Length: 478
Ligand code: DUC
Ligand code: ZN
Ligand code: ZN
Image 1 (cartoon, rainbow, N blue to C red):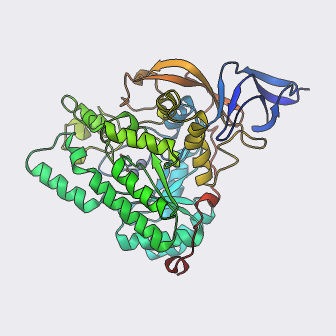
Image 2 (image 1 turned 135 degrees about the vertical axis):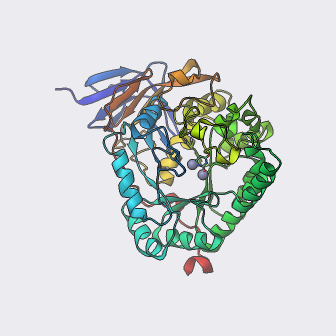
């Protein structure tokens, strides 16, 4: 009888803290041994010359999320998760979004139905709280947090999602009481509406004007306001999709005052600029996302924040709207004013290779920082560690085996999402995840999907230890 189900031999194991040469033994989907001369196994994987990393945890992606105005996300839990797997990601955390006027519980139940039997990688849910009524704040949200939905996103913009300042304070207070983590989309809604009207009034309606309607000042102001709310309630928060210098400065300022402000950034702020919205014709619509990409100097600010520890996590913000589609970027098949273009770009499969190549490959970040930003920290921040996010005895055998030398030119035709474009078409990267395992099963190898839909399981999240309040203030004790 073989001792183990699988042994991965001769690889270089990388965690957030260490890089070691050793073999990995797997039994029943978990890591059972790390070392040399481990014994025999039913299946052997030779990882000579390869890096073995914890599978990526993409803590910000949108899959099959109901959206208004006749739009539809192209990726469901199957196409989204095979795309994730082929890009070295083994856990995704998309959003169960409350619709205004509806219950939060209904959103969660609906989202489970959408995920059931489809995912190939494991998944947890964040909530989106868009209608914090009394029953939601007093009953539904606390109950859901205790059931394993321990993080939620709130928006300071988008008419169908945004909360007012008072509502944000109420919601943060519940999170503090229950120990949840709040993710904040920080952009000033009124400023965006005013700028949008002014631009459209003079006929400035093309995709490139999306970036002008959402300048950095709009993000800076809202980031500062979110930090103020965090201080008043004495609650750590996560500022998501930070795009450039001005928001970064606010977060550094808050950190300098001893506040626990977590920050996330995404590939679009490293590999795209606002000029990508200014492509021929209407093609810039492919890069419309919020906050918008900035300029080259801001890309450097984001790189600095990744290397010096300002950013806690690096996520895709995958928002899969097709380009040539009546329910996508050209709603009704037409070239519409920028304010009607659905916000968001695809990025689940390219998140890790882009950061590996642009960050580790250039020496901007170490390979251990890469693991921390893309796997260990998101697992810790959202209560999934040490089951996810590391290579350790007892952890789930979720791994990506990387060929650090493989050179790839990104082509949409090679990706596995259901979107009809990638904003990174033609970009060259060095380093690619060739084999991905989820709980000891090879789910993807060399771009081929080897797992059945439904292999992925739902993961309830523990209360995030890392996001506990640091101080007790008057506001926090209320
Ligand atoms: N912005 C968001 O806030 N969410 C989805 C995509 C985007 O661009
Ligand atoms: Zn957002
Ligand atoms: Zn998002």
